[in-house]
Length: 574
Image 1 (cartoon, rainbow, N blue to C red):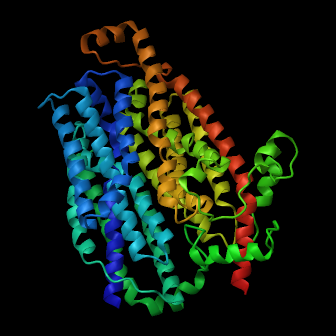
Image 2 (image 1 turned 120 degrees about the vertical axis):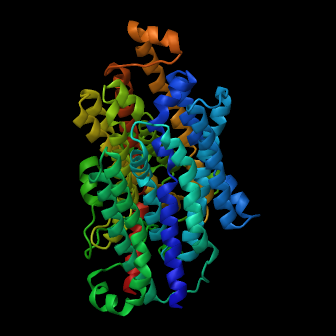
């Protein structure tokens, strides 16, 4: 039995490795300027290449189809070969060893982006199969490691040669393939899954707390320990690898189970925690309770745990269905009555709650992703070209912390309860602040602070989105519904990126010296704050609109969350 448990945790560590080394889309800005110059394309055309990578994520359903016919390890290696081919050919193009037309490079970016979704599918399936009782915590932890990919690749690139940006493409091609080989043995030795007693489930939760602490240490290490010297960077990179290998000591923790329960576990109260509020038992009780109460709404503040709901209500106004005026009508119309009700695709797109959620994601996390794709040109235009790698590390590290923080509400929910849609609204606040800050000042400090805030905000949104989708629109339909939600990523990448590229190219063509360069190279380079000033203002305003959408979503769903929490606590007391 202990051997099966050890193998299960080895699979979790392998999943963390896969996530940590397959977020290859986050370092696009590191080599985008060189790719643009080699291909001789405009900023608008470069934006289409970034969109192609994001469009590959919309094809994630193909990996689920593949799992119906081939084993899991084969899906992983198909993803590895797609990335090897997509990034490897681009590397040959950027070295000028081969010449390809623009549409072929577009296809290569699409293929590389698709490989990321296939890797994600492998990770999700592994977590779901091996941690059925603590599936949400396993997903939250592993997904967070996708946020450190850019920081790890940045360290690896500096270790090899800090002056060659095309090395990122070489690393993107081969590191996921090598990681797949390293993860193969644990995946092939999947242990049998047996139901766990309540004590074992609590012990698993304790181990997840330990793993989250180790993850936080890894993120802080990557954020604060860095160097532009190759030899020093190699030592730092080795330290990062050591931190990723360290969780393999989990089998030792398992064998120390009795000691940990006596000495440590008594300090934690994790009952009812989990990344997804809607689990099968709680949901069935919730539905039964509502039927007994004859659909009567009863929203209360719990005496055994203070809530933030009432505090936020005082700030943004009462959000019940009985409010007067236009806002009250929007809040009360077709309001979600309970969590976990299954929504098929046709029903989903008819709900106002879904479109508010869609807009909040579209004007929040997606804008942050587009910002990261443009970091190379942003730093170059502001005269901070040498800062590109630092900015990538900042965005990556704070995105990682944002993803880790997305699980925090579940660990504190008995002490401080708040609807998850309310946490989503709070997570959107830093994004408009960051864009207005960067627009107001082109200094290095402002750019670094803005990048960190955007990374933190978008990371939280990316990680929390699966949970919110499951809670609002049903856990059994989450696969289809979440894929519908993330269609906003390629759309946003195209729209926001096109807006930024159009302003960039217009400002570049306005400069006489730059225009002469454009005539010689067919590539547009813009310098100065004017290149992205209007873009930052537009993005900031759109982020405010996303925040407003999230607040409306919170007000509309708050009664359902409060009823669910009230019923869950009543169930625990019975």
